[in-house]
Length: 489
Image (cartoon, rainbow, N blue to C red; front, side):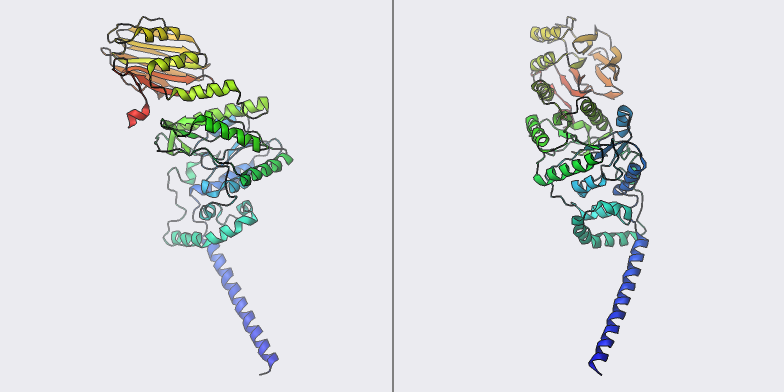
């Protein structure tokens, strides 16, 4: 056989092999496309609904960008009603990485849009953290693939075999696309992109997230995103994430203030939050130190609304003036005070900013010293509390004005509103011989520890949230503070 004939024969064989390979690959691709998606009812599949909502809104909107601290920590309806703009919660999963989250927000940018970035980390490596998580989000929904950048392709290719293997397993076992019905299912999200699953529980964790680091890679990319949005007539803002606060906290508020100042200095867009305002009591966290329960989500949302309105009015970064910083530190310090005399001094210093609700249980009034009685009088209270045995007593002081005060042997009840009608309260005080109980409910939620002594709830009329829930047993020898952390432990 001539060399030419041999070459022609080899060419035909190679061509046939290539054609067969292409047919196999096409059939394989068709088969794979047929069995996919397999995670259509999972948590990450909510990306489809988020993008659909983002693309469906024609005019200006508020778009929230970040990881799961958003769907587990925002009430978008509250924002929409207060800001009079439609809201889309694009927050999803930390495993996608910050860059992926930011790319998600580039759909349908129109003039007047407000993008609120709520990252928990500013020192990422500009990569998808977990390719499998990304595959579960985009699957074979090809219109979502434009979220991926060229630099993301290697990560996605490397993780595709794992994703495909798991998808084939789900397909073979008929277990794919099942709605788990829990908080990590697609059905747990509402139309805004928030988790609407009612979360009443709370958990305590040994440590919090810590103060974020700030890296050049993240800063440069966010500044590029800011420019991208500005060119299209949109605005980028940075807001805080919920910070897990616990009694033996290793991170001081001053460290968050320092972080905030550095972040504001390095970013081209406004940082509209004071991060210390987002240090929430551990009772408001759900199943992670970044996930809030339903009550915590409402508190965090109210703070974000206040930040947005302040930015609308002033158009600048959050104010860290000396006066405001001093108030922030005073609010934080309140939850650390153990001595009742020191506590009353702190309340007196900030009484113009606070609403103080007091309900007595058991025999709290028999051991009041003259000094403590004098401090209570300085707060504006007029009842003579010394040397009483088992009486009921309750009081409400709002911004230095006494709204209610009663002292009787019988069980006492009181109700009303505070903070210009934003909150309603119902209170009960039962002395030792009159029910022996305490209740302080605000908007239907119980805040009294129902411990012997003075049960005190402190509400901030500035930040519109509960600052502290504490009890002091005046009849006890040490008269030290009792808080939820001690009761739960």
